View 1: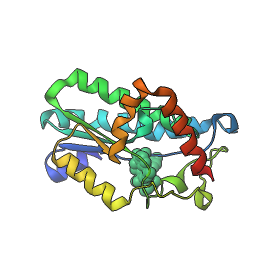
View 2: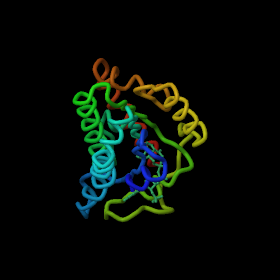
View 3: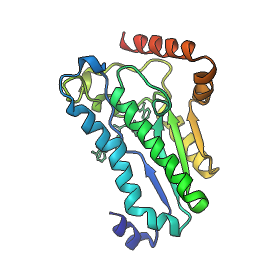
View 4: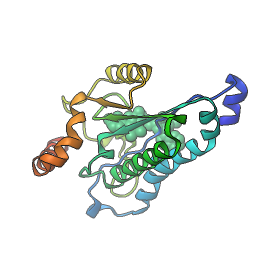
Length: 197
Ligand SMILES: NC(=O)c1ccc[n+]([C@@H]2O[C@H](COP(=O)([O-])OP(=O)(O)OC[C@H]3O[C@@H](n4cnc5c(N)ncnc54)[C@H](OP(=O)(O)O)[C@@H]3O)[C@@H](O)[C@H]2O)c1
């Protein structure tokens, strides 16, 4: 795929890691543990494979890797053990890559909250490792419109931002985690309970 892109466009200078697979089940209710492999394979290993295949091109062109990730890459989240773990792993991988390569490439992380209008919830895996489909829980009023999300991502990429938080208040998670950990964890649990209603 990368060779085809180089043949067609002459170079690869941007890689957007967007593919993602989610879940919605507590860990103690999982009946098919292969759910972890499926999610890790897409969210983590799939991204590593893409980076591996075009790193030479990206280095040659001072390229840009943009990871479309989630606040769950920064903090655990109920009903999303494999998803949060795979996004934490991707975060650690990209941070290490940035340390190893310095300014030879740019790496940006886009941390998303809940976004309306995509298939993430319908495609999410349930406790039996099968897609939830139309039975998925509906979005609350807190979810962001897809168009708002995509235009903020494009704006952030154009401005070469290292981190983009959508919605913006997610920016406070790492800080709140240090200073108000109990409050933050209670808030996450209560938000998840509301989502399940
Ligand atoms: N929507 C949200 O609320 C939300 C929140 C936080 C983070 N995110 C992140 O945003 C990214 C995009 O998700 P989305 O909301 O747009 O969900 P989506 O509508 O389900 O899109 C997921 C994308 O991943 C691709 N994909 C899934 N499994 C794949 C596989 N095995 N191989 C190759 N491609 C695969 C899908 O390709 P096909 O269409 O070809 O299947 C699709 O393009 C994900 O990384 C997700 O974690 C979304």
